[in-house]
Image (cartoon, rainbow, N blue to C red; front, side, top):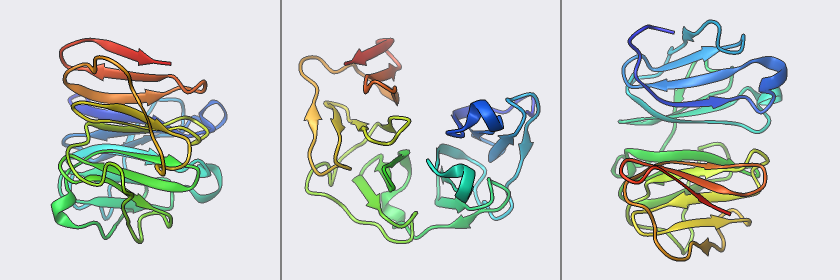
Length: 203
């Protein structure tokens, strides 16, 4: 990995324990890839038109389809060969930049920093919205390892869905300020990383 790369996110292949594949989004070197459990990293950015990469999502079927989605400041890109080459996806410019990407049981989900949540059933070829969270700021997006639990964070709400965003269960009580990252573990627990209030968990 380049010594001065600023990492914005690291995501692993669903079969990481077997294949050792992971990807790092960087703020100046595009997407870095490893296939040896992080011992060595390479920048594979052919077709990636913007090196300021904000977020990544790896297909749950990566072992078969080698699909990775990358969001940069100015676009969203898809690779179907494990990050070696990228092609831009059709997402309206006003939706950018994105705050996060996730796969939820075959649905690609993107959270916009200003325009709500977008859903794609075909790996980014087409996009749509749902009645809830169809506008406003999204701080982070995440899904459980099996994709069954989808989660989002906004400045005022942390919410989880088990039906690809058709309905949501919202957090009760205080929502921490400055959420910048979100993780859903295998049990469905949501963990929020913040700029001001440390790490929060919602069971």
